[in-house]
Amino acid sequence: MKRRKVLQAFLAVPVLHSGVVAAGGLAKSTADVEGPFYPVLPIPDTPSLFDAEDYAGDALEFSGQVLLEDGTPATGVTIEIWQCDANQTYNHPADNGERDTSFRGFAGQRCDSDGAFTFNTIVPVAYAGRPPHIHVKLWRGQTEILTTQVYLRGDRGDDSRKINPLKNDDEIYEATFVFVV
Image (cartoon, rainbow, N blue to C red; front, top):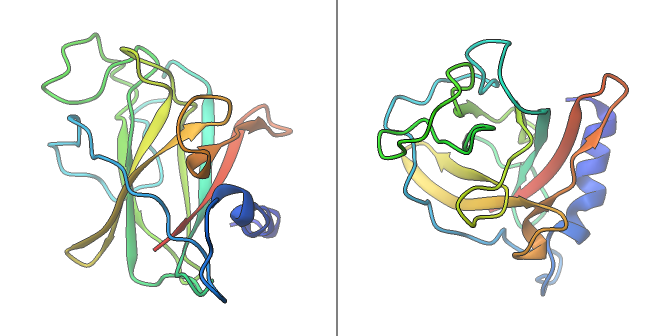
């Protein structure tokens, strides 16, 4: 992870985690429902949610860190994300929409020793009355430690779970988020 992104992630903590912060610590990330479209296929260990380069939607580099309440990196954590494609369809048998076969829609990876992660995905889109969002699940071994969703800044929902994708010099959107467990 680039030094700039790590710094942005740390600077974003007070904004991204509203509410009461324990003395000497950070507020835990807010949990949310898993939703009906958690992947049924094996989640590949990869930073990319793409199966091909001809996907629909705006490319997004979604990165950040997983920290403990004392601000130290969470080690031994696997992060999974999943979301609908630009056609508003999940890669799930219960979603009957027309799916973008170039966009797998889910991936996972083990965070590095700094608790850092980076995924290549698309800027989330709204569907069926839901604001744009990315589903997230964190695991330590076989134990689920957090299930939540992050939303786009400006949409409804909990302000502590917002990302603000901005275009970089390569015209790719970037967004960072810090999860606290």
